[in-house]
Length: 349
Ligand code: NAP
Ligand code: ZN
Image (spheres, rainbow, N blue to C red):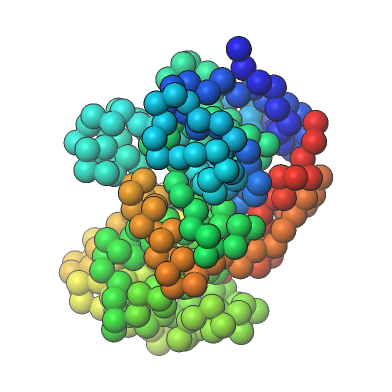
């Protein structure tokens, strides 16, 4: 038996989102049922529904920035109790046995991690995401949300937070590291906050000057508008690490030239179009062009605890279930400051 619950549903790649219902499985021995309280809107939700990454199994409910409270636990669950504040990010399962899973890097599961939505679950059903009132998840993929993080701000940490924390840690952003962040959206603004908390010297590269005051308040030390062609000339060789969080294809080769010797540009933005890179640009400064996908489950918990310890929380705009199409339009226009979070209490079937 399963439960039918209210959800925001994408009927197809071209129609607006509508309120409807989805099914959730009953709680198995290792499962936790979470009553969802807040759900973040990630640009990946929009890429997915719009077909930027290929055809999708419609009707589909997206959302992989989920926080809520534990409503029910299975008989074998040991780490959570009813009432706990918890979160779920982009993954709900993985094989648990491959080298990458054993290394705690479930996001790189060699047998294919199971995404929170649009993925085939172990029972053959299609996973449905967090724009809904509850979710059932195996306890290994449930995170603890520290009390110090305001609940309505916590959800974006489960994707935007970990996706920026993980490369900043992996490439050792630290005191004195010169970090640049391209694009000041949901991911970009978290990259600024987290890199600043790690002690890095942070530069924001946004298209215009519109977000300058915000960026400096978020913790950036410097800010440049990339619509000014002089910016890319002046900043050549300036950074040890660049995080590209742009949702569209940009001239990444031009940005690689901003790296100092041995610097790395990490792409977390996931446009569908290719981004050409000249060998000479990499060779010229022993530069690296890299990518990074969210983070592992243990690292996600580490990030949540880091944010609690450093008083870091996303800047959010709260939206209601009936305003989600408008919120998506504003994300597409780069007009969100800096992450929309859906108040799931406004969602009724
Ligand atoms: P977002 O809030 O829409 O932010 C993207 C930012 O990119 C915008 O704020 C804008 O910054 C800049 N931008 C947008 N269109 C642009 C264009 N045509 N040219 C130049 N700059 C442009 O999106 P998000 O939720 O942060 O997600 C960003 C990207 O990361 C998406 O592609 C998403 O799918 C991907 N993502 C990847 C992972 C991963 O694991 N790797 C995880 C989550 C999301 P300015 O206004 O400052 O210029
Ligand atoms: Zn996301």
